[in-house]
Image: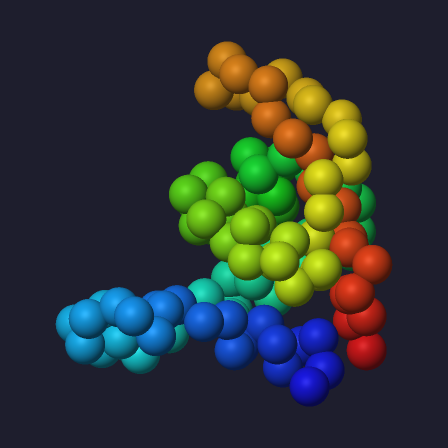
Length: 103
């Protein structure tokens, strides 16, 4: 499976979850598109979830909810820097991970 294909196949429900969770997971349509936009932004330059949201047009929550999935796949990882965000808190800066190959 290519990295781009993996963006579409992130598991949204555990095997032990009730059937309602599995139906809800099947109804998700935008996760792969959001992850692709996030990765495109990270290919340009590292950023906090707020900076990535600004560059992609996604909401802050659409970005920060997907960064852990991308990290588990090895597609995104923290740079080790923490930057001050508009929320008044420090935020981790993210970069492209070792497993990401855009093409």
